[in-house]
Length: 494
Image (tube, rainbow, N blue to C red):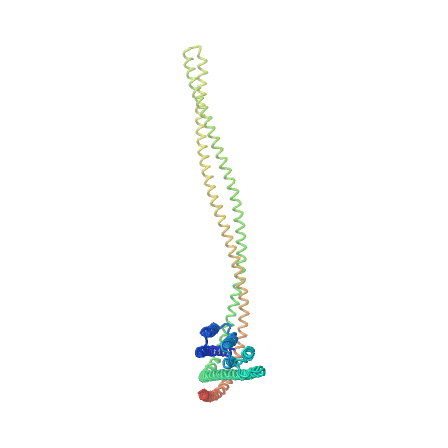
């Protein structure tokens, strides 16, 4: 498609160039023919304007399909203008020039349009200027001129159709040739790529063959070592069997010890539970004693207050006794002044004074006793407070002891669980060791089979080495064929 479009544009450029030459020639003919200046300027100006339009269409590559129609129209208009100014056979023949240049497109449509305009110009020329331009003009000229122009148009149309077919065939042949060339180049590329791949494959095969030969030798050496290793493995399997049997016995002993440890843990847990219960009871007892001590402290405080009140009462009594003693002394003095009359009153005063002194002594003794009671009460209160502090510490210790028993109980539970898990693992280990013994026995029998297999592998490796030698020979032959193919390809390409 791109090729056909490019050809159409090339023909547009060629036709525009021919039109430019035609305008220049027409201008020269008009000047040499001494046409009026106005006619020359009009025809040449029309031709130049048409060329500008055609050039713009060609450059912007838009409306390029209209260029042939513009050329047809402009050529026929210029022909008509020239006939109007100088009607003659030579001027009329320009119509055939317009028809001839359009044949360069090889398009029947363009020839039909140009032929229609040509027939129109022919009939205008014959009708208006036939008698003056043609000597001995007769009506038969209408038929002959139209018939000749029509035949020329039809011949050119047929020729354009043939040319178009030839052009299409040429394009198809060129396209087929181009496609064949591309396919050939692609085939050459593929062959080159195949040759390169064959080179790489030959290199890889050669390298792989060398490596395989090397590996075969190493494999032979390895299997020799395996043969010795199999015997060593059989001996090791027997030793392993003995070791596993001994380990199984040790596992049984450990399992028994684990069971005993689990039983001891259960007993310890029971003892800890009993101790924890005793600690709870001790804690409850301490709480009761603490309450009783608190009540005792309260009562001792009340006793101190009561003894303090009794002391105040004794002080009051002591004051009264002192006053009574003073009154008795005054009464004795007054009785002695009264003489014989106051003797009886003096006796009473003496008794009262004795009673007051005795009361004072009694209050002093009671006061001393109360002081001693108060001191004892204070000391007892202090001891009770100390006992409360000691019981608080004891309560704290019992709480800590209780927590310790709980932790011990948790530890014992964990220990018992661990012992149970360990016992289960020991049972699993016992089963596993029995399985290992079976596997070791199986390994021993397998080792014997492996020894026979190793001997068979030796024979296979020997056969493989022979095959690798044949493969190396085939690789050399393939490399020679690849070189021959590369040389042939280069010769054909050149």
